[in-house]
Image (tube, rainbow, N blue to C red; front, side, top):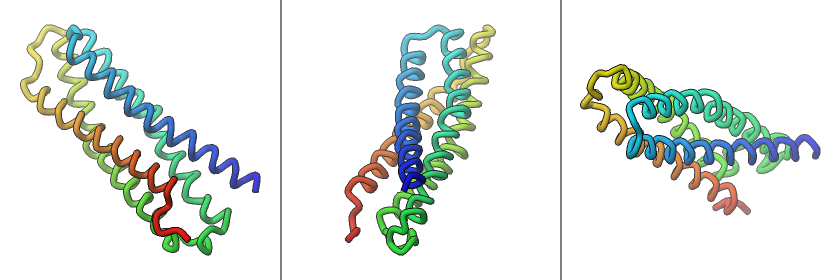
Amino acid sequence: MVLAGLLKLVHVIASITLLANFVLLVAWKASADRAGTPAQRAFVLDRVHALDKRVTAWAGILTFAAGYPIIRVLGLWGGSIAEAPWALASLILMTLAGLAWYFVLLPLEVKMADAADREAAGAALDPAYARWSGVWMAGVLAVVATVIAIAALMVFKPGAA
């Protein structure tokens, strides 16, 4: 049971870190866009991308790596995720959120950071920046909502006996 407890602890801490990092990145980027200078925007976008790669990525990996084995280690629902609809739904939602983060949000961060670097060097801000920023913000907020929905599934376990 020590292993199960450790897996739960890692899962919970990684999930909290994941959600907190997304919220921090949204607040930081919004603040830089609203009131920042070109140099400040470039710095913040560089840090946003770095934190996403260093914190968000690892928090997501640890959430998966610790979460899935909990069912197996504890022998819950016969040790099969298919027997726990709330866990299966959580896994599907987390996979979709991770794919959106990797294939949509990260590339947008690179585009925005490059545009901000060019602006800081004296060029005009790319007109597409506002569109990229809006899509990024909507995407991050959608991922945050998905993580909150997953937390609700974990707490309430609909369909569990």
